Length: 399
Image (cartoon, rainbow, N blue to C red; front, side, top):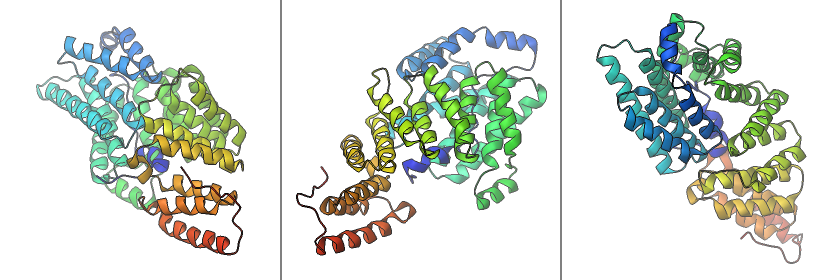
């Protein structure tokens, strides 16, 4: 399966519509009462998800599936739990398989219920939400045709639901996210999306996300997170992103995803010391939970990059060494910039042997963004410096 690098994967997963829906919203007052009579149960699951206590969330969902084996809602929530596991480590085959298993089961349950002739709005909403997560998954896997297929299904379902009741505020999370990101696709992909009816409107999407964040019952956290993404990745509104992710990081201090995004926001705004502080706080906070060693390695990599930009090259080298000692071979092979940046830091410290060793490691990685060419040029550069006698005594090689 083709993969894309860590530094753009999270952004790319949201390049297409991130059709997230956190609850089935019925079209009549009576149906609303039926849905929200279980709100305490699902609020508990959501709190565990956002606090990154994913084992507890999954256990609670499994209990609901046993109790209500034909109800589509628990299966959708299992897809949500597994999605957050996948986001924590997109290079884990077990995370990928677990997510696909949950999503496919959710689709089967939803379609079966609708095929039985029941005009079940909850089944429609759960099915649409699951298709949305599948669209995001396929974007992350560079499988664009599958992504478009799932995205189109999700958009059609959500549009129909909102037409029935425009006060279904949680539903605006799905359509709003779609509109924001579909409007910002690369030009060629935007043309393709337009042909198959997947065009977007970013300003409309922002307004819809705000509506979900302000008035939604289950969608508040996800909508706030999506608004933060829009500010960070699409609008270059780093102050807005900082405000949102600082709030989410405070509310859910065990969640490393929100903290990483807060650090990203500070870094992109040029506030390197604050970004460094967020990373250090995340690493030192014993309440922080990680789904894998790769996710922990990602925090060290972000800290290293921030230290590098702040010109603390020794500190950055140390953090890159920690990252490389923790991460899996797959993670590092898909992340050539980690080795390349480590080489730049070694070179800045005039440790040319160490720099060359890191640059050579880049050549064993995937060649994203022409990193192989950059590494070869860097190897030639440090060799010339070494030959000129610029190398310092006791130059160190990477661990």
